[in-house]
Amino acid sequence: MQRDGMSARVARGALLAALFAAYPLALVRPVHTGSSLVFYLILPVFFWFSLICLAWLLTTPAGGVGTAAAPGPAAWRGRLPALLTLGLVAWVAGDAFVHPGATLFDTVAALGAFAVPAWVALAPRHCLPRRLPLVLALVWTAGALHGLWQTRVGFEVVGLAGNRNWMASTMLALLPWVWLALTPRQPSGTLGENLLRKGCSPNPFPNLFASLVAESAGSSRLKQRRFRWWGCLRIPQPAQKVSEGGLGENPFQRVSPKGARLVAGLMAVGVGGFLAWRAESRAAWLALAGYGLVFGVLPRFSWPGRGLLLLGLAGVLAAGAVAWPERVAQAVGDDIRLPLWAQTARLVKDHPVGGCGPGLFRREFVAYKSAEQMERRVAATITEHPHNEPLNLAATLGLPAAVLWLALWWPLVRRPRGGWLAAAHFTAWMIFCQAWFDKTLVQPPTQVAGYLCLGLLWRPWLACRLQPARRPPVLRLAWGV
Image 1: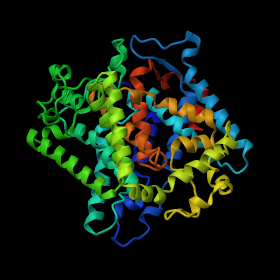
Image 2 (image 1 turned 180 degrees about the horizontal axis):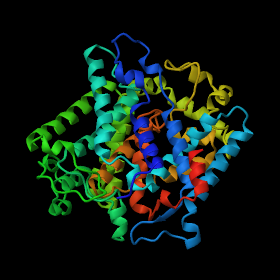
Image 3 (image 1 turned 120 degrees about the vertical axis):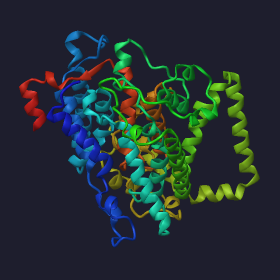
Image 4 (image 1 turned 180 degrees about the vertical axis):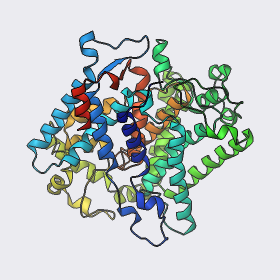
């Protein structure tokens, strides 16, 4: 195992702070405990974490993992991440320079949408939390406890972030990590490096819960069998020793019997589903239904069968719209998103290449507001975000940056093998899909969790890692600055 250096400890601490410390007052003072402004104090944790990730990418050479060789000429292998990051910084910084009013904070936050998943994908294993499932399970637990308290006192279920949509995303997206944290042992390996050493590529098609149980039970036969619904209730087998460099020993395995772990996992599923239902977020349930359809139902059919199934679903939706036209019209009329997206598309059309500048959507969108938008019941006086992250990036950074950002989410089209990879895929899918309707990739903790899981999905596909030991003294000084 590599020895932790100062830069690794700083990066790991910044990641933990970004997950837990964004709302410090809300974390320690729930609603109705003497303070009514708990949701209005937010720390810029994503800004600092993005700054650290940029420093790592710009100053740290890269090298191959195990016997896998990084692509490209040998002279450029170590410099490629820094060169690509430098090009991205030049693009976004130049865009901010030509649009007066863009601040350093907004510029770094915009770069973080690219730099954070890139750093997670390339970082050495010792830079990430050793017990990653336990960390994300604690994030879920903090939100669940606040949601239960808010239900108890009659407050709207909004969690730590003060918004019911982000609360529903947190409760559903992080549930697989709670299940992983309760298993007797975590998957061996080092977050994808084991696949690279063997020269393998991840198999994209096992079922999420089947792979979780297969990892926890250590059963090779379960991975080969077709998934059955009762597989997710399989009680894990006794713990086995984890190889050095893996996710680490689970503290629950010595203190909780198998039945208690199973009951705790089922209770977590029940609590998460209940709080997501109380949060009343349509986008979160739509993302969950989409995951079940794309990765659970459609793979069981041939391509003609998939087409017929999708046509049948479209017919059912059309029949529902014809049967209840008043309810559909009311739902469309009450929602702010359609006119907001239409006017944002006009802004993108006027600034297709560089956008209006990072952080300047609020200022530039004033000229594009329509009367139809302002007549909506939930219309806000000031619009800071189009409630669609691809549109937001296209409007602020330009269409090329938005296309590049969408390309980063390519691993979502395939479901990978392995407990932590399957959990990361599910979390990234839920947060990414909801980001088309809300700000789950703008506000912590879903913002940090989404980009973290996206970077984890890229790790098995990249045959290189950042190697801080190879930094020249000048670059070590630059990283400190």
